[in-house]
Length: 382
Ligand code: NDP
Ligand code: MG
Image (cartoon, rainbow, N blue to C red):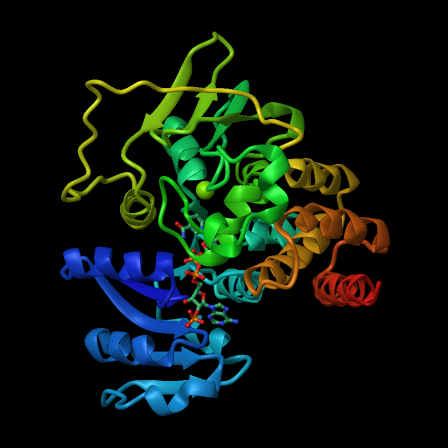
């Protein structure tokens, strides 16, 4: 029985983790769970899974928590998330959105717990601190993101295996067929209509801008000890090839399958064993698969993230924090879609280069959001 601490249970990934647990109740048990604001759904989940510990960080809708099962300790408030990272679990599944996931991973490593990592912002902001810490503690950081899971599968679950190149696929997002000159008038609901995947709002907008792919490059650099030049991003609109690894003899290994997160989620918990998943067969007949380069004009924000990679240190953290805030402004109709890369560029310009430490990341994360708000205020006055 694998005892799971699930962070972000009410989100898109979190709900699919619970589906996997419900499919194999004899293999998995949720020992603790945490969520942000969705108290009503959280309450249902807690009553179904009866974890030992339940944590809600935003107590606004606390009245929706109707009942807490006998034997469940309940925590709420800003730091409640960390209570869910408990010594009693076998693995911490981090499916929180945003920078909030980083502290939980740090604590998991301190407790010597393996981490199934969906929360890519942890590695984007803090990979330079988290990976050496995990290595020293003998803790595995297990990829959940579909592209990284695909690479990991192609490497036979051996992140130390030699390879020549990593090829990360990208769907191109919801706006891939909109003429570039019309992008300035797209709305949040346009950007949220992803053609292949059903995900949380922030990552869906990040797919449209391809900021998500920039973040996945950083994630791959940390997970597979790659340089930026070892990684190529390929637009593959069908989302059937989830990523590929090229070896020195020219062989390319790809992992293919229907676009579904349940496979990488389940595999992160059971590898090297593969368990049955219903309705996951891929029918290859009649399919055409396309691959093309990333278009600079359509996806300027992807190249801004590349700039942050080049700048290194705390710059990826700054661009990640800025993106959380900027996407929020876009989703709330406050800024145009085409302003997103302009904000990210400005934040990079205004960020002070700092050495890597958890304190400096905390400061960078806060400052990047402040800078975004300042730019927003000055642009709305102009
Ligand atoms: P969602 O927005 O759907 O869910 C985010 C989850 O995190 C929710 O449960 C939310 O709670 C919770 N949460 C947010 N902030 C906090 C906090 N401070 N403390 C505790 N819980 C918090 O996001 P996704 O599930 O789409 O994505 C989660 C992570 O996985 C992201 O990092 C994303 O990039 C990554 N990922 C997602 C994929 C997908 O298919 N969705 C694919 C690959 C990676 P509540 O809703 O209750 O407020
Ligand atoms: Mg992905």
